[in-house]
Structure formats: C-alpha cells, structure tokens
Image (cartoon, rainbow, N blue to C red; front, side):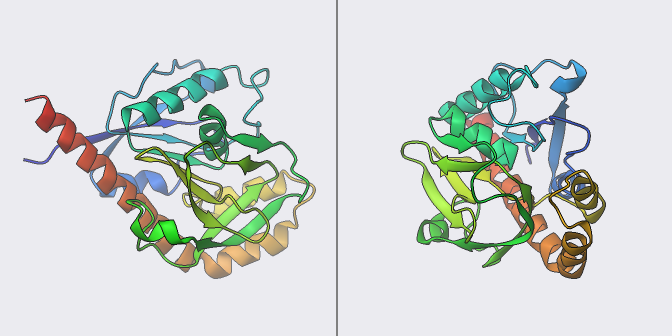
Length: 243
C-alpha cells in the first residue's frame, strides 16, 4: 500500500509561488500543505510531514524586520535538518538554510545580480547525491538574485557551481538541499520579477528563458519528481518504523 507524502511549503510572498512545482509534485503523488506567514498563517515549530520546501522572496535571509517570520523559518529549517526530513530551499530558501545551519550570505553581493538562465555545473559529490545525481548536466537554472551564499555551513556538501556565484547547490545533513536558482519558475512569473528590477534587461532575460524553456522545464520537472521520490521514501520509512 502506498503512503501519501505530505510536503510542507513555506511561501514568503504571492509573487514567488510554488509555480510549476505545484502540478509536478502533485502529479508525482505528493500532497502539498501550504504555509503563508505573510498572510498571518502560523508556521509549525518542526516539520510534520515527509518533506519541506522553502521558496524564494525579495527580502534577504537576515531581513527579520521586514519579514518577522524569518526566525521561525530558520528554526524550522534547522529542525528539518536535525530530523533528516527531506528539505528543499530555493533561492532565498537556500540562503535561509545556509544561515540556519551556520553558513553566511552576502546581501547585495559584490559580483552583482545574477539573472537569466544560469549554467550550473555539478561537482563530483553530485554523482552520488540522492537528489541531484542523474539530473541534466549542466543544469539550466533560471536565476534572479543579488544576495548570495558565500560560506557553506560546516560539513555541508557542495554540489553545484556557476561562474558568477559558486554556491549554486549544496546539501546539509542527510536530506536538506539548497539551490540558488529557480527550478520551479514559469515564464510569466520570471518576467514579472524582471519587470520589478531596474538593473535587469527584461527583454533579454525573458527571451533567453523563452528560447530555453523546454530544457528548463524538463530539468525542473526532473528535480521536482526526484524530490517527490525522496519524500515518499522518507514517508514509507517513517510509517514502517511506527508499526
């Protein structure tokens, strides 16, 4: 008998949604449980399901005054790492994961904004990683960030890099991953982000994603489905150990 994998999703703002990950994860048998702290919804103190996804947002990983729920998110991420709960932090979510576990993030990093479709090269540890092993190489990662992880947490495994910002993907503990890029994003969402940023060439980045969207979507879907498999395995083990 199959066990439903319930994955908690933390959304920081309406403009940075789960987007294409929603149908991809649901199609892979995952039940999504949304948490929107910006709308006053409380966050659980610890993960209660088979997985956790923390999405992106315009605030920095240290912006507790702007987003007063961030300390609770960092605590939730640390608890997920301790529990071995499959976790995926995307962009801001990756930065929060790094900070929660002892890493560092540069706000408005010196190299400037990374936008467009970034070429992420997998490093040797990725070949045996439960999430990214076997994913497209190099990985086409839509990107739209100015903050960056500059120091990985102690004992983190560095998985993916790009020429502009090295820490594109990493794992903390057994099953918590951070990716600086946006594997979930659709063209309309991405274009909306670009239009809000004066330092982004909207026409150029939109045209790039539009031209490469079939490969971007295929890669993003593969990552989503792999995460769903990891979460389902975790759920099955948890049920088995409770019997």
